[in-house]
Image 1 (tube, protein in one colour):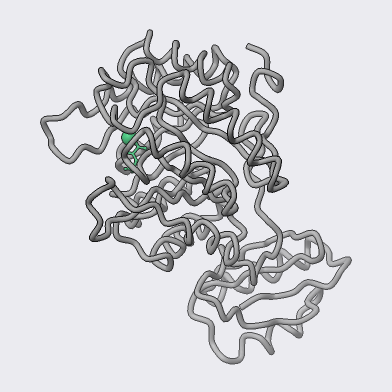
Image 2 (image 1 turned 180 degrees about the horizontal axis):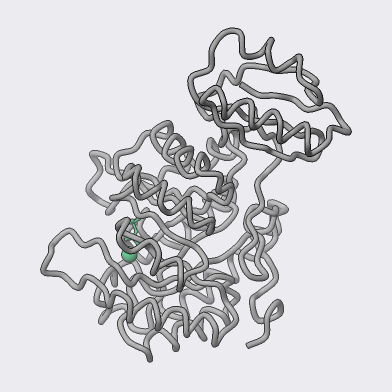
Length: 347
Ligand code: PEP
Ligand code: MN
């Protein structure tokens, strides 16, 4: 249910409504929009609730939310959510680039990559420290040392950083080092982890589960939003289908559909979506055209020697070419690139 507030309501009236909801075991999320402020009410709503709330001061009206997405849907909040990380705004109508290695391998690799992607025009630095690998015998990341190296490279180049958190146990330490918490595809429905990540208040990038339908995915985002953390972005990273010619099937439909149904920013991950470096550029460009607010790209100084995901990683030259091509396409669809980190925050 949505409580639509009168214009000119007072914060005291708002607090009283939220307190009343709390008393009856419901949760009210205040959503301040451009045109109106609403309270999205979640929980087991009973039939008389609307009438009860309409007697309270500050309330203009109440309406049922028909969509399953009580907090993520456009019904509750028509205007786009903009997430500010460092000097970068994600979801603002400008296209954002996140880039860096699949895994942090050592200080030189991380620092060299950070400098190269920043110079090319990236805005956010990525690098995995806790790596979910199919085999337990593959390189599983440097752990906390990886977080430290990523954070150091981010600071040295003036870019905010993003890294994956794989378990509830590591949420605090990842939140200490990282500006954005990434929830990977394998944990996309690990509801305890989603809630713990949400509670940090840090922006969360939620990847789509390998076999998640769009509804599964957006409902997973609801878990994070329901902790009171509004800073959630969704990431399409390809799904498992019958097709074996590519690592995953990048669902471009999902990019366009998410922008229709949800106000949350959508980030496209053509690296994991395709699994093949030569497909990263065309699919990144397609994602921008389909409405992505940003892309996340794996970049490595020497993809042949990468400890993970080398086949889908771009070298520095290819990343520069991708950014240059994206500039043209993003301008053409009127979502130009966010000003380069180099301009926004000198190192
Ligand atoms: C990654 O970003 O390196 C990663 C492991 O992603 P995903 O969870 O999409 O496989
Ligand atoms: Mn990877």
